[in-house]
Image 1 (spheres, rainbow, N blue to C red):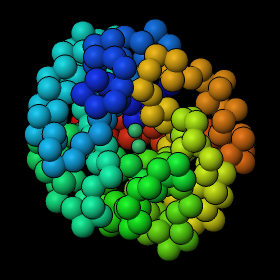
Image 2: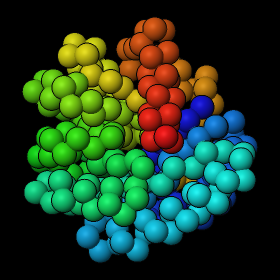
Image 3: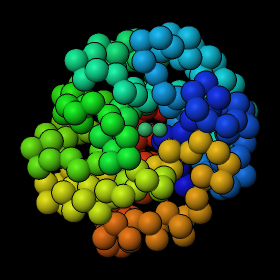
Image 4: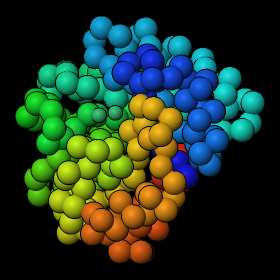
Length: 216
Ligand SMILES: [Zn+2]
Ligand SMILES: [Zn+2]
């Protein structure tokens, strides 16, 4: 199991990074990305600290920890430059907090994230056909989430990704220990989104591929 979307106390998660990683390890996870919510106020504060702790956790060898960010509720105009800043500061995983059904995320966020070629567009809500086509072209992964609320549109995301051959990735968006779901629950949630066994296998492999790509 891999979760490439998690939150620590550096944003609205419950745990410091060391415990977050230990809880993921205890739940059977091999890798996680710590992707706290960032905007212009905190990106340069958070990232060096997440990088430092991820490198120490990974060095100890139990679980691979990747430093990342989730650009959250920023104006879509600022997404390309902030994504660029995140990479320059050393983020290995750049996510954008997509247009979930349960929050007033600025319209245009999904498109800006895809155009900026971020790694993962998290909980993209009712993403449009044009956006999904573009995500497939640009290699931006669309998230299927186990997080309640954000998961309302999993079925739509799965269906659109199938239609336009976009890549899917399953994340927990873990904020607390109980959010690291079992592989059975992850599979059930993916089934509930309408994905078949082969599609679910491909989606799980995508997490591994992503880890390999950024670990080089
Ligand atoms: Zn989010
Ligand atoms: Zn999140």
